[in-house]
Amino acid sequence: MSFCRIRFHQFQENDIVIPLAVIEEIDHFKRGSQVTNLNAREFARTLDSLTGNSIFNGGVSLGPDKGKVQVVIFFLKPPLKLSHAEHK
Image 1 (cartoon, helix red, strand yellow):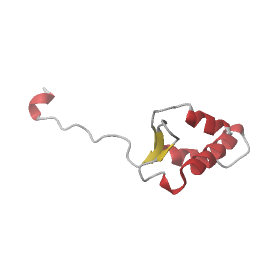
Image 2 (spheres, helix red, strand yellow):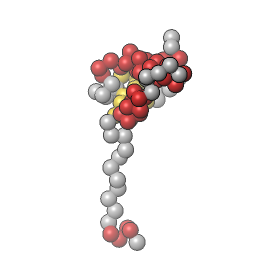
Image 3 (tube, rainbow, N blue to C red):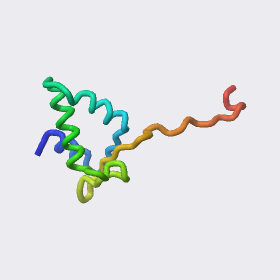
Image 4 (cartoon, rainbow, N blue to C red):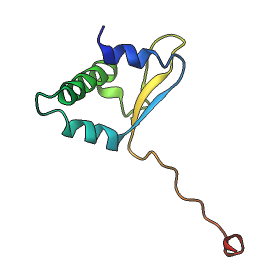
């Protein structure tokens, strides 16, 4: 079992939500022979093997009584709309 796969399973019943921007950043690090590059490639392979094509469709369960892993396009909630009176 790879190091990344072990780390995913340490979250137990908690969900793992990865913003798409993080995946894009990891993709930039995949080229090269430094340890960082090797880790980025291992993470990408592990995530792909766990999720396949379901990563954007609500995520994939990590097993019975475990959380799920998913990638979201928009991670932040829209800003709160405050009335003019609340600005004072």
